[in-house]
Length: 273
Length: 284
Image (cartoon, rainbow over all chains, first blue to last red; front, side, top):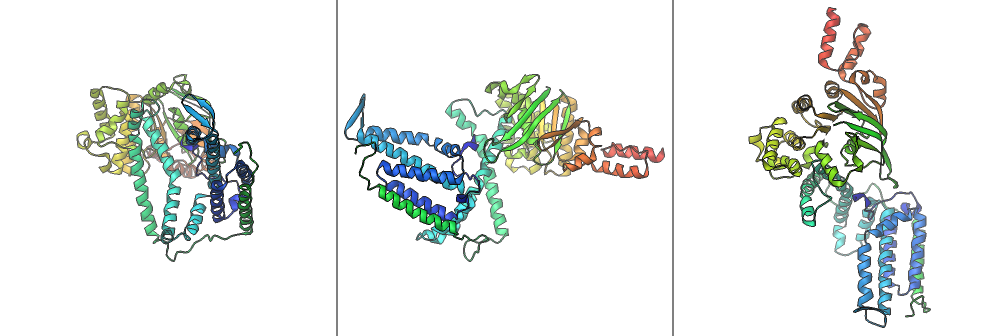
């Protein structure tokens, strides 16, 4: 059950995208997200779709695996689409009882849905191709350029890597405790919502205890190794930009340029406005 | 209750790059009232196997028959019923404790069975006694203020209180001091002889296994290597060592003695039996 969560999971295939510097991938993804909100017509979305297809093919990650990531957010997407569809004023094209679907609504709904899906897919390609530790290393570097945050860059990224490191551990622990309580006849599968919530107590208490114990042990272990934060700390693995990263930056600027160009296309695609 | 494992295979994370075959076509029959030991290297599939016996894991293929009935054909409510009869004590069971008092924690299982309050209290009292603790002393304590060994016993009592007919224990003595080990193993032996409970014991201690069980199931890389009496299994020293296992220390001693005294028996795996045999040969 818990194993079906794919967001934030790392999927190693050894492709060139996996080998890229994490900083390159973070910057590329950031540029991609910003562009996603700048494009204003379907030509732009078509171009974004092409970018996604190309990146996915190079990354060698099975398409099914990426689509599974969208599944978890289907509800949010549906909600946004429905709200936009019925709540936008404009030229009515169809009426459903008291609700009116307008042409403008149809357009915003489509755009919103596409934006959300592309956002999820794009960012999940980044997490699927980057190991969590690389990702936080890259984030630490990026945070050095943000005022105020700069001072805590190391601490923040350390916290992030510890948190990411413990997600699978805690999931395993949850699974184990759940099974142990099931073996004692606990029932998590049937009953109404209140009794189900009550049934979670035998899982949550041991889980919290073990999380606190682990945190305490980790803190002791770090202290025993004389860990004292970011100052003067050197790295075993230095981040270095390689040629493939330089090529990616060129491609990134081409993507930005291309997407800006699409905003100037005046010929309508599907929607007349 | 008899347990039959038929062509059982289990693959973890099937269809992802982390796919792993934990069990491969296991066929084993565990007779009613027997005492079985499971040994195997870390990662040989022992824990995966025992989690199939009460339906906590669903097999990729194959099935488990309890008293002749396929347990994976059952409805959810029937599956929960089944777990009342097949008690499973996990590794480090003290990590599952959660209630405010020892009494309440041990009562969790029997309460889930829907027993009357009186019956629940009876069982709690009995099972705490069974694991060698003083009921009146510990019943109102928080399980978290007990020592590690006591917590382990309370957790085992929590499963015993359900009075299962099959008791499965996954390394119940790991991390306990020698005295705690002895006491817990003696209690398990007693449950087997007195209550005719079918017991399945997973352990890394060849001495304990050799001393207690009637049949040993040896696993390696998800497959059954041997399923036989300790006498037979412990003579296969080469095979056992090649899969990262060993025989009891005393068996090694007997093997060395055999070089000097060719008439001595080798198929010995308890200190008592070794003593008798050595005395017999020397005086012989």
